[in-house]
Length: 187
Image (cartoon, rainbow, N blue to C red; front, side):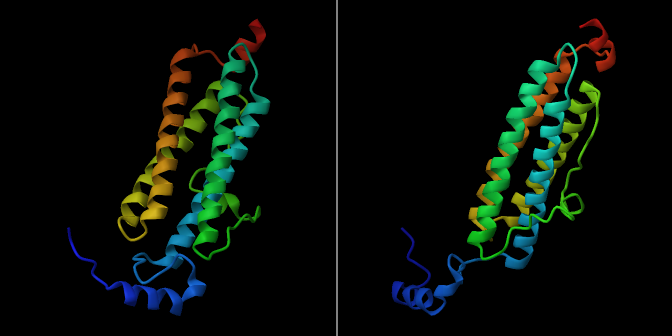
């Protein structure tokens, strides 16, 4: 078994010397300010995703809307959980979560959507999930070993975003390629 690189007395002294830094120690290997910025961008992304899914949940209509709307609602709740995890990590790192509604869409990686067609809603949500998957993959790689806790947060989010993308792809495959208006007329 390998020896510690630093003796325990030195670790204890360092822990006491900078107690106000909370979990940030000399072992933290990432650019803290940039990590906080990235976390706040992801927070904005998750909030915008929550809002988009909520809009789609409440405005979905037509013959196939009930199971799709239920999926939108489930995803909205999970995106809100993602936002909560990100905000919590920001605070743990000594930052401030940015919930400013005036700048949310500017900071978010994915966009808001006000589609009224059920198929377009699903497609826009799938695009947003794919953006999150690509962004979070890049973030986890960028974080590497510099901040393993934040990397794990993003890995958890990434796994669920991939699941969301798969769910949405499945919905697209099950719904006939008619417009929502045509389906509504038949209902």
